[in-house]
Image 1 (tube, rainbow, N blue to C red):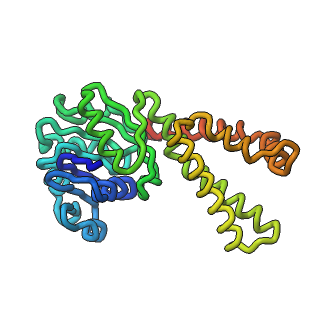
Image 2 (image 1 turned 90 degrees about the vertical axis):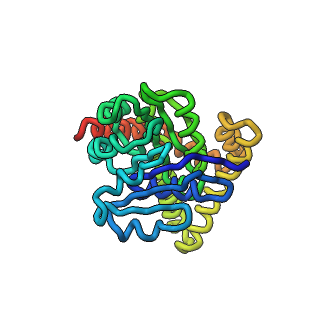
Image 3 (image 1 turned 45 degrees about the vertical axis):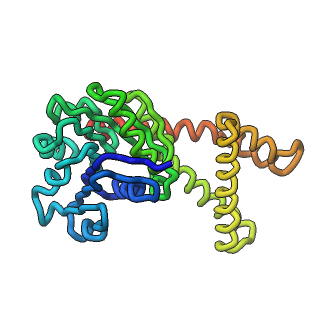
Length: 284
């Protein structure tokens, strides 16, 4: 089903902003009025120019951000966290009536954003993850005190162009980032370790990569199929049980992982990420 979105601006079309831009340019998505994007350098801005995309560089046009938000109904803020407040103060006077501002930055609260913008401007926080680059992302979305249900739905529709969207209260957005935001790194780390284990068993690095990455990809597809069948919450445990024959090799291996405290490690890792997120929010 086609998705129609209003004119959108992406200020700081770097990694996450660029991923969202790719989603907005995907088949089946129409952005009425096009997309305006900004980057600091012309070297980054130039390659983004195409039909439907106006790309500006602040190094050659100091007013690029204000120009980009002209006419935009949705404004995504993709600059680094410490730059967000200054950017919001810069664009505030240029925002269209009814424009919705959505932050992609970690640790910047909606209260901080609201304070930097005119009182009429609604804001939301989002937390996309890196699989958004291939349209398989998970984005956490939290409303600010001034945003309406319609503002939230508009933002949800936009991020649905790059994957799944989970709407949460703002007090959960940092915790969400420790799972879906940092989660891809956890998966990649597991892939690294399993490939090293395969090499230690005598396989070549190329063979190890084929086996491990193919296994992760296939397992993810099995999970997706279970999700389509409506079995998502219990699917990982059920699929694991199907692979784990009683008294077999997999059971022995899983027991070693459990005895090694893998579940506790994941919990500690998530808590460490959450603590660092709070430090960033405090400017540390």
